[in-house]
Image (cartoon, rainbow, N blue to C red; front, side, top):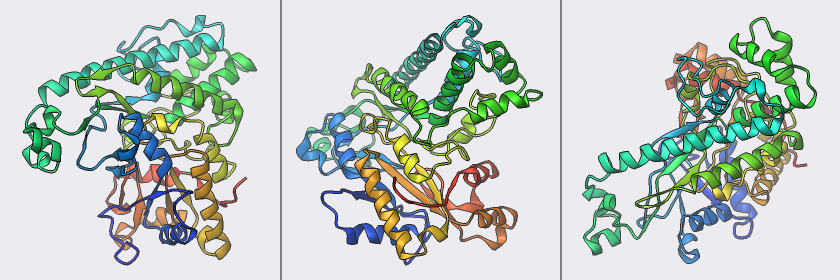
Length: 428
């Protein structure tokens, strides 16, 4: 990969603090600093736990492999689908504040959880958010079951030939012939938008009472136009990605709740499985969500994967990891995806390489499943967007894949440019 610098085939690394030597980790960092977006680094110990949570016995879970973007798989033995539908977490906040109405269409399309003007406490608001998520999970599960019956029961003989048990049982992969089968996945998009919005409502409306719910709703309905001071309050509220307990407690509570909710359901192939990977879906999903209490304006991209919203993580990469670690990664068995962007100068020295190695070890110690890096000068991205003919070979990490920057749509390019550039990698 270091020699050819192509965007395919993709390269992933399983790393274990207990098993892999420093020499191996150093080689990983030497590739990272080339700026090709490779490799995606996976915490081997969390990957094993994810497979066990899918029902794979430990003796076989050791042989797990990264698959697709960041998904966990067991080659030749496990039947699964990452997701047949995704849940827009930004919409969960919007539905809560509009009693189930979609701002863009003006239609009531979700659960009726009550007029937020009557919520007297943050706990009432929290309960309403959870009810919206419960409704969305159930709707996605029902849709997944329909797709299972209509679309996914057709034979796939070529795929089945790569599964030993399918051959031995004369049973197609699509019919559950693999050694292990797990229910379809449900993927979540807009993690930081959910957390930051809930933190802002708690801080501004209920804790400090700097604004009323009515004022916040009016500002959101106007996309903050004419409400610049209130938007500043929203932007200044505690933000996920800064190792701030005033917001990170929401991440732990909400994503434990979401994992529990998804695992309540099963398909004919097994228990439903959650994951957090955007596959660039955060950009089109943002087109369906109006302004949010986090300070995000209407129709903008949502945050990607489990990454903080661009420009809101101020305390360096170690603080990002500490915040991200509040999510119970081993529960989100389809995988979790963390993007980080660093300056090339950060890895240009021996000290920088050593610090990056320490950062990756900390990621594993904290129980974070995955991280990948864009190592690129911010100005170069802007120049490439303005003069694509001069930058045809520029590789960037988008979501769970690497692509040529100039071949991406402008909205995706803008989202990559907006990601926070980390200036140092010291581990606190």
